Amino acid sequence: MAEKEVTLSVIKADVGSFVGHVQAHPDMLAVIRKELGKAKDEGLITDFYVANVGDDIELIMTHYRGDNNEQIHKLAWDAFLAATAVAQELKLYAAGQDLLSDSFAGNMKGLGPGVAEMTFAERPSEPIVIFMADKTDPGAWNLPLYKMFADPFNTIGLIIDPKMHDGFKFEVHDLVKHCKVTFTLPEELYDMLVLIGSPGRYCIKHVYARRNQEIAAVTSTQRLNLMAGRYIGKDDPVCIVRCQSGLPAVGEVLEAFAQPHLVAGWMRGSHWGPLLPVPEQESRPTRFDGPARVVALGFQLCHGRLIGPQDFFADVAFDRVREQVLELADQLRRLGPFEPHRLAQDQLEYTTLPLVAKKLEGRFEAL
Picture 1 (cartoon, rainbow, N blue to C red):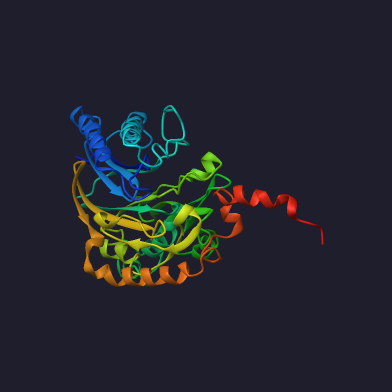
Picture 2 (picture 1 turned 45 degrees about the vertical axis):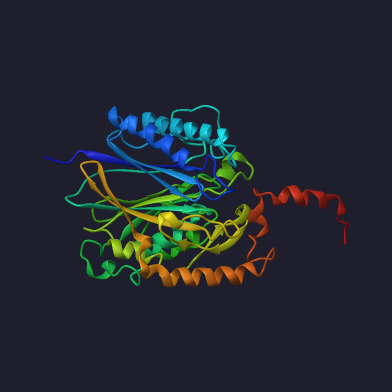
């Protein structure tokens, strides 16, 4: 008998933190666990795990209701509202920040929280890695996903595994023009790099195996500043990656974070800096609202149950990249308000800088 298709939904939001933009309060996590526990008891969801990375709360849920299900998204919305109430009671910073509306409208589209979902039939063994980042934007996944699914120097399976040798398809979204394009790799690799090398605008949304069209990875691509028309916080994306049996091995997926790479974000979302892989308990960005953090939690799916998590970046094997990230952060911080530490002018359009620059508008004289 074929396995019924399961949906894995990861929905995240920043609805308040203490002190500053550092960490969700334990009372907020407790009220969310209570909400999701009730939904599990009632059969709305099969299983859940509540993670906390920096000031973001990630709801990891399994169910059999498909992507963009109104009941599941409403559950997440109500849970975030309950956590917001706690944040307001405790006078925490930026309570309800990512909730851009006063009411729920059927799903999370345009409401603020980030969403990554995939629906598939469980394999005999279904290992999954969920990546969660704080103080950066959706483009942070472009380079790691390229390494996982397109770079044989990272993923040797592309060369020696006959189930992977055909390559993968990448669906890339233009977050400014709200359109998408799909690239077939390896043939269209160079064409894809033209776009994804500009992570502030183009983001990888889905990755599919060419061999059987199976979903392999999905990301959240919500851009808060583009939705709100102003800077209200960084997007802090999430990413789901399936592993093994025709997909990259867990070790290949994690290897994509074994070298530092620069991401946009940090203080006021206005700077470049290296992404720091850390265990969940160390995902508290304090230095200049950074370094931007990434956490990797591994789960085995078993008939919709989440077996785990395995906190992958707790491994000492990532100590060296952490040292390199901190050294690189020192170098960039020395530049202060100068590029390339500060984002380029066009990338600061939706930050707080235009409010200050407006003062200078009447000071310019023709040459």
